[in-house]
Length: 154
Ligand SMILES: [Zn+2]
Image (cartoon, rainbow, N blue to C red; front, side, top):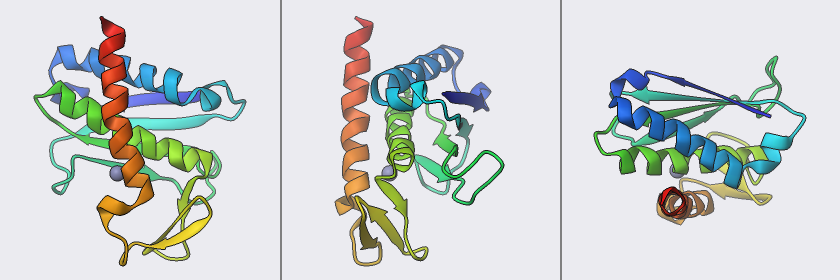
């Protein structure tokens, strides 16, 4: 099961709030079905932010064992935008990172500079952001799921 919550939706247009919720359900149903049906409970909180340090979006993972358990708690921050496509593509991108952590495909490495992808350790000081496998997947997914969602609405 996945429990999704939202905050600061008042920062975006009211018509966009519904789209954000629809798109989130669409992503979960189409791309995260395993976790939706799981007996485990996962939490994803999605917040809209006025400022985000120059970033469009961010995905934070509760990496330590908490009362909810390891890799059960996620915080997605989305920078506010007047363009719904920006909001939804960024949301799709960050939800992809959540899926990568849930599945264990992406994991924390031995220190802040390292990440593990498919069991292999990557040093992010030596790896271009644009060449990291988790970003390549997330940038692909943000376009693909958005297009799929648009087609599905017709
Ligand atoms: Zn990313």
